[in-house]
Image (cartoon, rainbow, N blue to C red):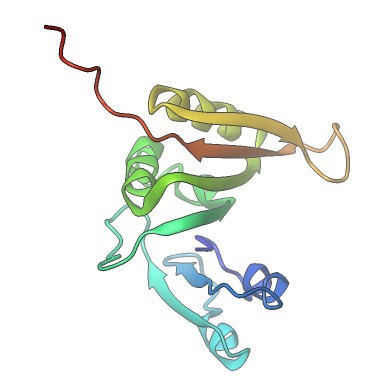
Length: 148
């Protein structure tokens, strides 16, 4: 899933692989690019990420979130978006966050509390770019076994 699909570039980059990408255009951005995504032959939808996303009957293995939290930072609490991502992501699924350093650090502090394993990486143009990448993996965990 691409949470901020733009023109469908993430899906286009994966077209040679046997996968499908749900392209999501965030509402209220001012740019309506869903028509372009359809013209490129991809699937997609609109979504306000402050609201729940209808996923029935599927979950996702990989979520790409490029600047989603910067878009919604003044509209809703980012922890609500992260909880929704936790719901729709399969155990051991991966999320690639791409945002400003401050936002990525906030995201990492919340995902650590959700028992996700994460790592912040530099932007491909180098360490002095104000945008960073956070790769997080949702761990599979269960409660402690009952002591006898």
